[in-house]
Image (cartoon, rainbow, N blue to C red; front, side, top):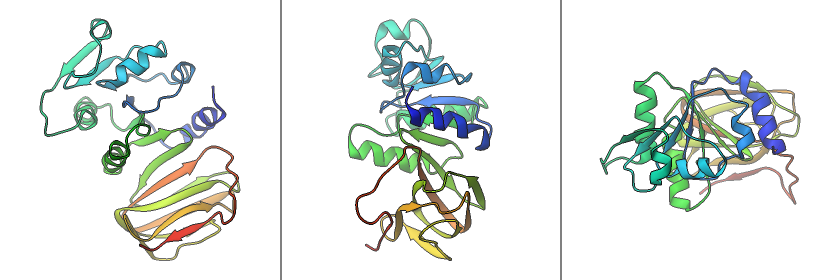
Length: 226
């Protein structure tokens, strides 16, 4: 198992209670990662193929059924939703909400085409679920939030699509700062205290925490004004 995966599993109990794993067709952890999480596994269509390659069979496969292979479908529950006005990710989210399996840990939001990644991030930002895309832990903040992170942890903050935030414990602090996407962001910031706090004054802030030991060349913190 990757060190980043171990760190994610170690920090998970402090993040809240999650009721399911929702897997998308992006980059997924290796098979041994799943053995440490006793949660129902929901696959958004083609993600079932990626899980099968890791020796994992999803409990439920949801989507328009244009990607999942037939032999896999025969071994698990399938829910076919042909509605083309929503993505397989959105269909799976609706299922977990209706079946009291939310909030969820969402895997596979990254990897592949940039438009898919942006779409996945935009959908994730509207939920109370968290995303894990090695090496990033991703979550949306809408109120006060604090966490114990190793000093020097790299992170980035975005308005999704906009939000106002004050921070404590970062190298480049934010005070009543309006962040928006695209616009002013706090990319590649660093923690300088064991406890960091994020006070959201309005809107939604999307937080991406690096669980890997990142060494930056040059400036480690960048604020972009577009």
